[in-house]
Length: 465
Ligand code: ARG
Image (cartoon, rainbow, N blue to C red; front, side, top):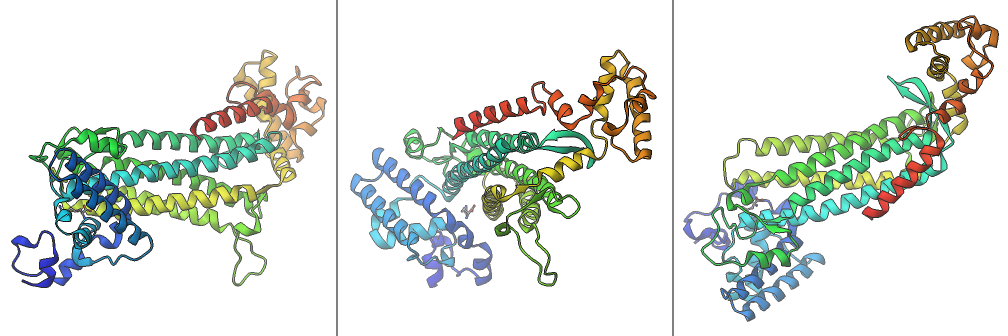
């Protein structure tokens, strides 16, 4: 028998060696070796359970556990040779175990298939990955809330259509970003419930004739419950799609934030300066300092969103139960996890390096007639119907533009020529401070409310920590 065929745990019914091209094409060890920790964790739990139900002896289970722990160590220190001939992480580890401990190693795979094994490994992996991403998102929230606390009274223009709309507190803007990430965490934690279900015991697709104690393995591995249907359990990858969708939303949110940071750092806005340590230069233009981190994160959102698409298309049309197509789930999901984690990390580090140019922001808010709505609302309080008030203020703004003056610099006489009822107290609402302060309902941008909102956000954050 050919050496390469003999080595394969499934080699028994084959008489020809695997074509080398096929071997290279079907292997997954080049990327699924990453699951070694989870694979060993799952195998130890499985062998303990096999001993408990009397399928293997206690001594065998002990020797399996010791063998696996020593393999774990070898992999950790880089002293493990992965073999493509052994296809994937599961067969590599199992073969090494048998080399090391002999007969007992051959019993480990009793009542199990790589189909429930890989589904279990990936779930264990994703559970950890989700916890890490939640943690990193919380760190970013912390950075945002720390900056927000310093910028409650900083006034900047709020935009719609990227046109100056109304003055707002900069902290209010930062809190809007915070809201996005808070929703992202909720989504991840919700997805985690459906990740934390144990497929082990489903075997290839139909379960096994051994009376497995699935509750025991479930508890050993920290799953909430065993899966209810063996066919579904080996084929379901919804949980990867959910996490991938939640990660796409994180990247979409980061990308929106990037876009604003890039604009704000530009020569035309000059709202912020990003710390030198978080920018890069140009090889030809000596004066340049570019917001590359924000640009790269914005760019990386593309691959994470692409990975979501890949996973959806991967699963679409797959008949029950397990199909080898599923091997294609790993690279996109690993890439998504890595990309999101690295983007969040670098962002949390960059945010505190940003200095806000308060004066520039204030002056930008003065331009663009940002308090026009306040003037209209002032008129409404004097019993002018809103539509009429809108018209009066529209005319006033038109006039002010011609005069090249902000609204607050028009004289009372000038203002009264558009609305006779306007009095001296109008200047209070025409100021940026007055406008911001007036939006004092729950959810509004008034400094008192923003302070409360920061405190409340910090409290919610502390609960998740
Ligand atoms: N490497 C496979 C995967 O990632 C797991 C092995 C299942 N293989 C099989 N022939 N049933 O899905």
